[in-house]
Image (tube, rainbow, N blue to C red; front, top):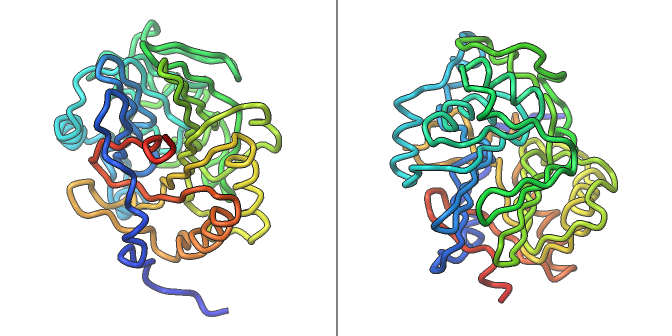
Length: 306
């Protein structure tokens, strides 16, 4: 079979970049890959916080480490001064490389499993700024209550296993093993709820009984799976939680810095066209709205549901 070259053209999907801008207290800002800033003007939590985005050459041939200048630029551009929590959805480099530095910079607690804790320890983050969670444990940070439910990484997991010792950069990308993968359920004091599924994996039935009006779904590598897997992923996330609005994340080329326009991952690593075709069919049949987020813009994914 002939391999496709190039990458999906985001211009084809321009109409999907339509999440309303936030005009109230609660907003969500997409900062690439699975990094989402959720804030209400008084408290704020951030998933991942991956801002260094080293090149493919660096990742493939060299050791990698957080780029403090890039991290500071993104924090400044996004207006992030203080955070209550930083939550890596798992500990591959494209999620957790910068998480401890961001927590350090913003006064946040680093939240996750032992693998995330060892990323924090490798950066010298003190133990009182690290929170190792139990699956399904509820944690409250200001107006946000987080519940981390065990999940899986989308196949294939190129760096499987858990991180059992502190990671002290610079290191090879393979040092950032997947670790514990999470479905992150977010409930705000306003009653609004969201699911953040950072990777296109799932544990069958794990979200049964959970509710979320909005689902942020990671779709990296999803377009390379067979159609049954893609439909099951939708069922295990959107249908299980009753989400009426779906916003896709982890589709952008994470080897490209955030100060350049986002582009889709190349066909060699994913096929966003396939994902959007199948998800589009499912969304239309089930009366669910389907969206792509606009980087840097503070958005209100619940607005269209009110």
